[in-house]
Every structure is written in C-alpha cells, then in structure tokens.
Length: 216
Image (cartoon, rainbow, N blue to C red; front, side, top):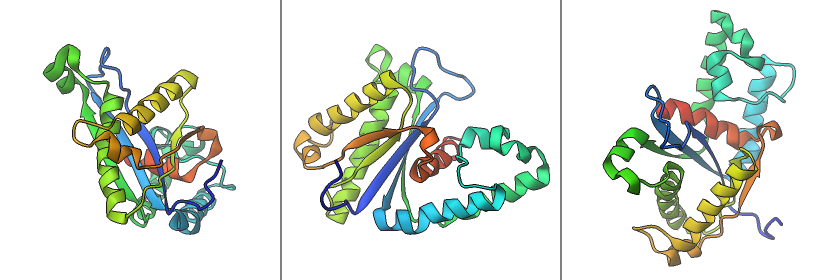
C-alpha cells in the first residue's frame, strides 16, 4: 500500500549484462547495475513529460519504450534508425534529453572474469555484490538528505529472477554489509516493486539508457 506521506525520492534500477559467473562473454564480461534516484516532484513534473515530448516528436504516440538494445540495433519501433540521418536526429535528441535529467545516478560495474579469477569459489554473485556496493552509497546519499524513505522500482525479469532479486535486496536491508551495519540499513524504508517493460515506466527507461553507455 502507498505510504500516507509520499517519499521525497523514488529510485529505479536496471542492469546491463548477465550476472552468471559460469559462462562469461569475452566481448562483454561485465555486469552493470544502473540506479537512478530522483525527487518525486521532479519525476512527474519534468521527467515523465520530457519523455512524452520526445516520443511524440518521433512517433505518433507515447507508448514506445526507450530500450537501449533496440535503439543500438535499430529494432522494432527503432527500425527507422537504419537511415543514418534519422539515426543521428534521435540520438542527438536523446543525448540532449539525458543532459537535462534531474537525477542522481549510481553505477556499479563488476568485471566478472577478474572477479572470478581473484576470488575463485568464494566469488560473490555479481548481482549481490552490485546491490551491496550501490546501496552502501545510496545510504550515504540518503543520510546527507536526512531521508529514510526510498521506494525502489526494478524491471521484472520473470518470477524466479524477481524472487531471487527481492530476496537479495531484503537480505541486504536486514543484514547490512562488511562496511555498513545492519542497524543502519534497518533504519531505511525501501519497499521494492517489479514492473514489466510493457508498463512503460519512465524511470526504468532512464536507468536502462544509462546502463550500457556506462558499461562501455
């Protein structure tokens, strides 16, 4: 249920690459977690309208989902980007849009091959590691803003994957990390929800658009 008093900030996160340590892509050996935090007022007053305006500039409706992979490969709704002039136009518009986003961005990147070589069988799951590194820093951010409420929205991947992520997230919030105690994390109120790409959530699209460029 929604809080009686809405939080000042909301957060969205998405990932780039997979978190498997068993099969590692030599061309892309990274797992990247992209976390966007934004003031609730700025989100609905600036970010949501800005994405809507961009979509109406290039399509006839705002239902298009800005997905990094489809943009890069000119697939689906982005097939018109196979025309170089049109590709340049939308990439320029996207770059201008991202420059104006009133967000705080946290990026955690795990080089899986190096991680596995260093720690061997004791290597942590890259997703768990990325969550810990990210939210250690998110905690400092919230402390600086004197806030404890931060609803988090993640992109749904499937029942099993979502359950695993939810378990990892709440384990972090109740057990803390090597550097930050469980007591400090327990003071936070960070409910997590999962939404599918078809829900067209602006914050998830911003997190997605940040992830791959950071990984590169």
